[in-house]
Length: 394
Image (cartoon, rainbow, N blue to C red; front, side, top):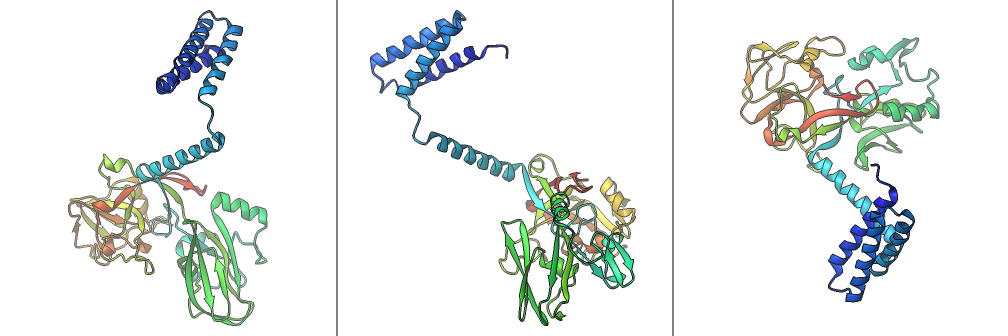
């Protein structure tokens, strides 16, 4: 680190010149080879003598000789930039394929540990229409329940606030108003650039493109086919919070067995009871908590989960079983763990998956254990949005 710059530069030139001689000795003439060797030796002697002025002169001469016989290719800068971009893409693909892969939480099955896409209606007439995990965000006014973050006059927040909330909270505001008397016929999903999910609300006389998933419009905004709206009626008004964006560790499960209590991601193909996409037939990815590993005997006696006859241990399980709002404990299943007097043993090479939002989670209690080959990796880190969820996943 204490070597002077001209010395480092000189030694680097010598190294490149000697490399050129080795690679092109079959095409360079004897006189050219001798000229190169003489110039290399002159520079080496100047560096050895620590004669800076002479070393700089000899470096320039060797550089000129080098570029004479190995000129820069045409459009060298353009080619270098392309190479840098290609290398970056290859590295990113390699990391995504073998180490860390980003995922977006689409549903609320892991709430409030991990947020799925959440819609906030600006106005709700009846308290019972507010989802349980959203009630703290609403307040009662004279004509109904209003989401606290929405302006009282019904208008959208100002542009600066909307931009700030999008980048920090992943929040997007929607405002769909019927332009005439009409009836909704269907809600069609639309995806852009893999990450952005829109919906096309198709009515008999008009249609709207909305930055919200069809499930969000149906569940949180109560927008359903057959709904009738008069001119000026609000179809959907409020905000949509994007699901948590997480990095999944795809590497460690190659060397370490999955642990009970992990938040993990798995593919849904080859799992009976989980249909593929109705349009493409493709299967998706789910993220749940690993409630049982091969050989575990499970039982649910709400709000508790038992493993091998004992209450499940671990921070994630304890948090759910405490049943302190917004957690509600573990609920009985349908086809599995439905009866508190009966147990289920996880078969070899399989894993039992359960959502922390047990009363609203479609998981192994419905369709059985996850085959080992379906495992993708462990949920590691929430990298966006920057809410209290940001950080390591527990």
